Amino acid sequence: MPRFLQVLYAALRFGTRFRGPVKPDESALYSRALALQPFAGLLIGVIAAVPTLFISANFRGLQGLILFASGIYLFLLEWLTRFDNLHAFDAACRMLAGTGVSPEERLARASQPGSSPCTPVLIALKMLLLYLIFMRTALFGDNMMLALMFLFVPFFGRIAMLFAYPSGSGRERPETGVAVKLFWLLLAVILLAFALGVIRTYGGDFFSFRTMKLTMSGFHARSGGGSGVSPLVAVVSLGIQDAMTFLAAGFLSALYWNTEAAKKLHSAPPPQFAGAVCETAELAAMIVFLILADDVIF
Image (tube, rainbow, N blue to C red):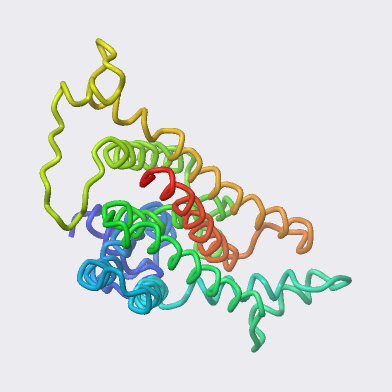
């Protein structure tokens, strides 16, 4: 099997319910598989979005079913990752809880039974944000914005994960190069900026299959009639600031957990903190999408 396919299979197998013929046992293969986690997050977003968008498209206006659809998406998001990130968030919260506790005792909490009260709070906040985003998008017939949110929330969560892993090698200290991180940051900015630019410029209902006429005259009309501006640049410029806001939210999530680990554990963040970063980055992305939904729709 070609090496690229081995890495791709390993990336899909690592931390998800997807199965492939390759286990990421080699440290080099494991590190390369880790670098493709944002791709796995995008695939998770697609799978979780399909049943949720179907419910919102066919039962629009029923608030009870919208709340149910929010729960379906959140459940699929966690189930497809085998609840690993949620368990990691719970372990990280237990490690950081309390004062006057030695770093050794904090690290020992990760393997001890129990749960943190922060975990149900996180789930409740995600449910509330998803419900509010549904109310702002699906009820107004803007499923395009809703679909974008479903796809990009796990995508940005796993980009933030790349900044949570300390340098090193092997399964305990997987290494992701600076070039890989910069690649995903640049790709995320371009994709999200273009998608938001299209939605801001043309809007439309995702399920009406209305043709979006991306003509040169349309671009010039929407962008103020500026001459010499290519259509791609005009659209991307409409969403570039919003894309940077998402990345800033994910970066702050990684910075918080890394800082707390250094302060209370006196060491590099343990592996559980990567899952905690993913969960809080997803929460932050939902908050940004909720703010953007008002701006895009109204």
